[in-house]
Image 1 (cartoon, rainbow, N blue to C red):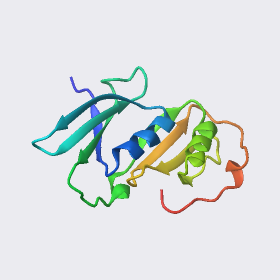
Image 2 (image 1 turned 90 degrees about the horizontal axis):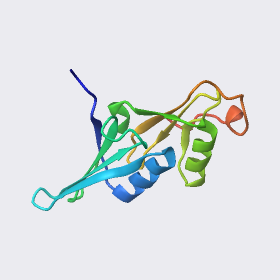
Image 3 (image 1 turned 180 degrees about the horizontal axis):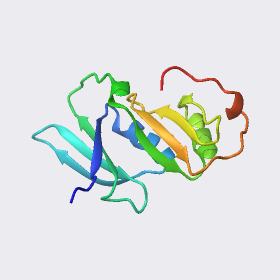
Length: 139
């Protein structure tokens, strides 16, 4: 039997990335630090999804530039209200790269450029400012 465990992304600023994913509804569930390997692993999950569908943040302590977040593809999360989630992300200074004009789907990027898809269960009625907001770059 195969079971999905987690997706790993490399991050340069763990605190900023944890804060970003907290706005989507994920919490830190465990952490592992390796002094010898000079890295930290931080696992995040939505409440009740611990051990089922986690994101592993890998932070290498020695500075390293990461690029190519877009070629990774994306992470996807169902949220309670796509408009409220996007408003919280926008208020925290994040760009909504593909606004939820259809009341169903939006794309944002993590602080390290990882594309994150936000999906509403069903469709909310079109609402401003989202209905007329243009895309903000690639998503």
